[in-house]
Image (cartoon, rainbow, N blue to C red; front, top):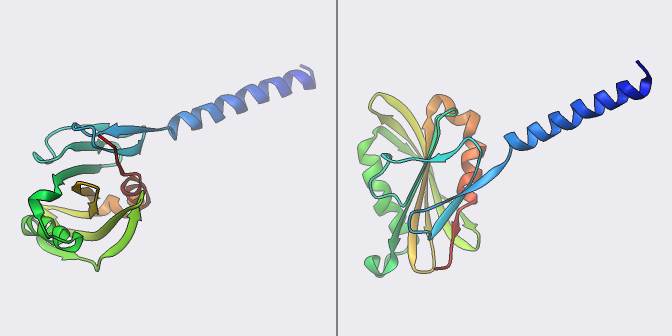
Amino acid sequence: MSLRSYLQIFLCIFFAALAACDLQNSTHELLSESQMTSLQVDSGWSKTTGLNENADLQAINRKKNLYAVIISEEKKNFEGLSLEQYSALTRAPMMGKLKDAVTTEPSRFQINNLEAIQYRVSGTFEKQNLVHFHVAVSGKTHFHQIIVWSTQSDFHRNESELQEIVRSFRERAK
């Protein structure tokens, strides 16, 4: 076999491997039922049900044991409530369901020009040690909760992916 033939085979294998990597790392948008919000996720994620009955979007990555929900509520139902107050109000039920719940100090940032406040919430639910990011977002007409979580044993390995999902949040014009 000539050197040119080896080079052609090598290039074919190289480009096939490169294409496979691109397919593995491809992302797609998950749109909420109301079409008001979305998250950008990798190919391992899909929509699901049964995670939270109030959620407008529910998503799962079964292979990595990761979960995400978005709950959207009209601001007019919370007249005069600040983002911090909304975050506390919506975090309280979660904290109440977790045994030995622990929360961190808040982190404040912007997600696509919307004010956001994030807490890390850990605790035990149904004998599973879980770690959540509870993020409250102040949208144009709605408050949004983005809640992403995993088991404690999977959390550190997937923390950056969960943060990326949070920061991919979009409030879409209706």
